[in-house]
Each structure stands twice: as C-alpha cells, then as structure tokens.
Length: 243
Image 1 (cartoon, rainbow, N blue to C red):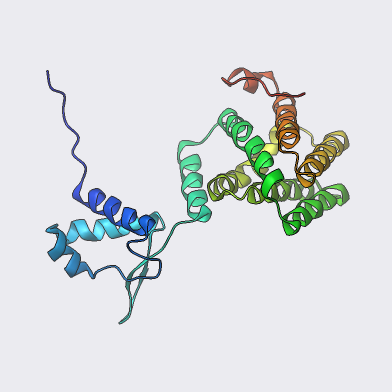
Image 2: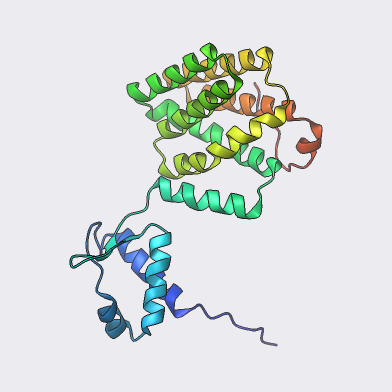
C-alpha cells in the first residue's frame, strides 16, 4: 500500500536552492540576487512563490532585503547570531523545560570548554578573568548572575565554533532566568560557582582539554544536583564524569 506523499512547496524548494548557492559561494556575500521578476522568469514559479522564498531566506539570515533604487535581495552568510535567534524562537515557542535546558548544557558546555583549551586567545582569557572578578565582587545577586552568563559565553566564544557559540548565545537568557530554580543563590553557592569557574579557566589557560572538559562537566553536574532530584529524574543521560 502507498502512503500519502508530502510534496514540498515550490517556495521552500527555491529557498533551499538559493541558500545552498550562498553557502557554496556560488552567490557571494553582498551579491544582489536576481530581481523578483527575473526569478519568476528563470524558475517558472509564480510571483507569490518567489516572494515567499525570499521571505524565508530573510528570516533565516541568508538575504537582507533593501528598499530603494539600488535595493533588492542581498546575499548574506548566516552566523551564530542567526542560529541563536532561531533557537530562542524554538525555545520560547515550545516552552522548553528546565530538564531540556540542563540536558543541552550538559552536552554543549563540556565540548566548549575542551575546544576553548585548544583555541582560546589571550583576549578571550582576559574576558573569562574579567567575568570571574565581576562575580567575586558582585554585591547583588542579579549582578552575579549576569557575570555568570558572561563567563559561560566567553568560554563558548573561545571554542572557536560558531555553531556552539550561537547555541550558547541562544541559551544565555534562559540560563540567566533558570538560575533562580536553584533556590536562594546564597554566599555558599556563589563562592562554589566562582571557584569552579576559576578552576575551569585555569585548565583552559593551560591548554588541558581533558581537564577543562571534566571540570565543566562537574560544574554543570553540581548545578543539576542543586536543582533537585525531581528535575534530574526527568533526564535521560549518562551521569557526568567528575574525576
């Protein structure tokens, strides 16, 4: 027996084709895409399908639409910021659970720390140090939490991987908001967090990728334990390596 076939919309096919040409460099960043009427003539699609394809590309960060005589659709290569924007929309639209957030952090952050140990620059190390100092000096919990997110973002950027950094950028606001689930962020929690960040930073500075990964895994694992067993039971993962 046959099952119903799902035929993609013409606009989606065109959008994927144009996106592929931009990624492959056939259409270079800054180039004008053919005018709307030319795309209609060249593809044989309706004007509405062409317009929809361009809207899809604009939302995905592959084109910038400019008005005026020299305007039109300008090719752009998406970066981590586009990924972050898309991931935030998904997270908000699905009302991502704290368990899903923790699972994502446990997967992404140790990898970021390991790569950062190999690729970090002196400037990025200074960013980590600056965030550590800001956390230690913070009087207000909100200031501490913001510096905490800044440190995690500094590690992600130091990984040198735009996709990982973009994903962490998307999670940054959720991480900031979710920190309140730990309960009272008291002086003990703040002290332990500062120590963990400093230890991970030392491993990254030393270029020890295994130690950086292990320490980040232990750090995120401690956060899971602090959240409590109710959330932890909802996760399906191999427990953190804490050696």
